[in-house]
Length: 557
Image (cartoon, rainbow, N blue to C red; front, side, top):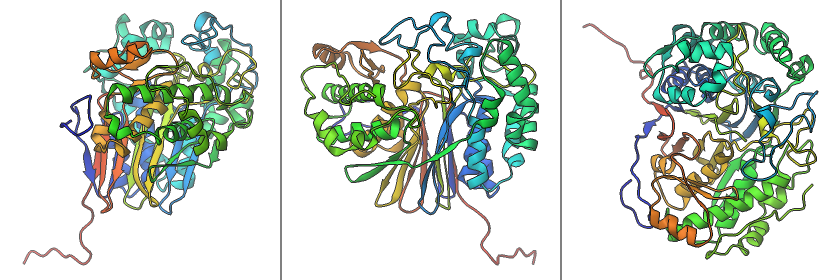
């Protein structure tokens, strides 16, 4: 990053953005970006591209995403309509609020349970929603037949792909849990060692499963052989997922949350996603400060962001859950007056402990796809199997990895985020868009569990307040704070850390906060700029050019 006014913490971008006039696909793996762009080149739209990229990611990013996971899609159709497709997992019908034994009742071990049963193994598995959500979006808003959309993923699974250092490191980090499952052990840890970067990973069983989905659609999982294999294995291992759970699951289309910040419309998903509500809440608080004047990465700037995050997390803990089970006070949370109320209590000289201003009534491993076409369709989709490699359970004979979404629930009964049968998991996913005068300026999102929506907030502030270019905004150093120490990425200096510590903040130095962000910026002349950051294998593919001019003839004479 070149030196700019009001920037205290300096950094240099490690990647370069891509541009295109006919389409853009940004994902966290180059082969998935290539697959999605193939759909655009075939004449498909952004929805086709995004769903194709997700199927490809389920092959090349198996630790992050799969058909047995869940997620949220934010679609902006060419006519201007915003649609949120909620494909989040739900608690099985046989789940109980007391099905896990908690080991703690506060941060940072609120969700720790005896034997890690909500994180690893059969009991950790919630009702999958990803495949239903992807196919819902494709059938309603796509234009390319399902077999063609899945074909690139099948080729990658059959023929294999070269393992990246990122995937190899993830395998190494989870060796113990992966080796406990025979299928995952043989796939990722042959001869008792993690797959090395540069080796080739072939997934024949998964290729055949994708082929069944191409032929039968959702029926392959809901009523067919894939669903039968899933239930047989999970129930045999003591899980509570049932046939009725698979047959009864439906994705939900929801209305987006729209808020205003410095003349921009900020559009995101509603509960049970946290982002639309709590990003709006934090921006309302920040709007009363000269954020640009504080300087990017200054101690004042970091302190203010941390206090805003702590306030949002305090409110989230008591209010933001599945709206079918909890009365979520959306209008109160996103009201400018509530932002004024919370802002008035912020002390720029000292850190505070925050409780919710309301009356009481996640995992770190995800992936994201951002895509756009020349017709004006824009897609921002965040999808996950929740934890790294999900529940670390592979369904024998299918190559499918199960989610561990039960980890997202509060294992303590009687709370807003507690387990209830059929309840959708709450999520930090933040497939966001920024508009000005009705035109989309930015679409972005990222993986990262609890750290997602605060990281998306920072990217929005980078773009609007600090005037960063798209590549700068996604790669800029991040902070995170839920209520305990402030996590700081390495670019923040010791002087800033010491200043924050003097205000009463605990300091935690971390190598990375959340995951690789994917973003697209749209210029008024139709040029799209795609950016992916250093925190993952992210790649932007832009499409320009097009068909020959009408009436052109080639002549040999």
